[in-house]
Amino acid sequence: MNTIQYLEDQAARAERLAKRITDTLTVEKLLIFAGERRREIEVIAGKRRHA
Image (cartoon, rainbow, N blue to C red; front, side, top):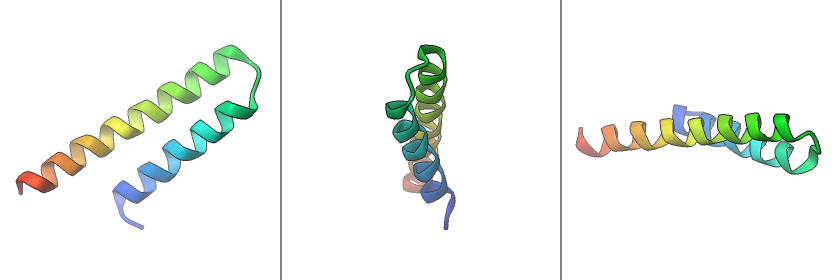
């Protein structure tokens, strides 16, 4: 599994978990985490395109 696949997996897991939880603070933290992973993917993918 490469870095992008790992980050995609982490983001997807966090998003799925956020759908099941009713605690607002936890949901927000999970969605923030997922967003951060997706931004990392964009940075890595951008570097690979320019390399």
